[in-house]
Image (cartoon, rainbow, N blue to C red; front, top):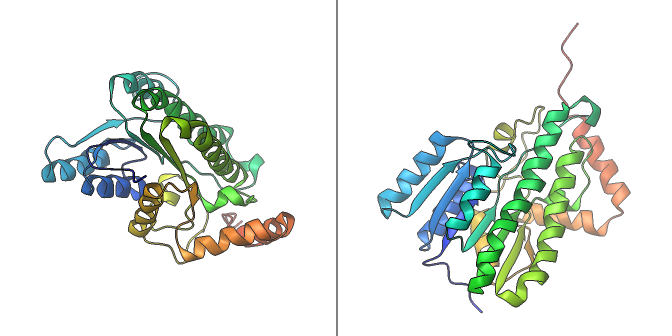
Length: 270
């Protein structure tokens, strides 16, 4: 059965830029109202203003740091607001990354990766599912990564969190199907976004060709309408994920270690 987007309201985390902002634009163009959540208030306001110019009152925003558990502008504030707001579609897109040998990464940074990618996405889904069940209609999109299929040395916590997103989404898909709720895991490869900067990843992971963010989101929405379990947008990303799933995991992880070691931040000259 086709999932109608027109007239729905979408909550989009990480909605200030990149994949999140593009989800907002494309869902809005298909007739959705959008509620944008991210840390950067000025970017949220800018995106909402442009959408409201096209359709007044169709976009709202809340500045939230999803890695903060409580207090003003925290995950706790968002969770408290959700029961009073209609959410037909949840785009769990906000993400945080880290890069480097695990013991050299600040513990607070690793905690933020887990808080944003795992805890926040889980608790937000937990908050919206009851109202979706009551209407017997809804959709949850978990924006994961091809890293969800492949352990990444020097990005071990990030890759682990993305694997969590994929496994949880597919499990929830079967759990929620009897209630008319669709769940989709989106696993993009390198995409033309601000991720490295916004997620504050140090190093030199640049230079590789990246998929256009517009194509990634368009593919994801098509997959949602077709009720797919997961999608790997883009030919390069699909090839990367296929290798990870068909070749011995220890071999593909060895290859990744060799590649990523060269991207580590260079020590300062003595």
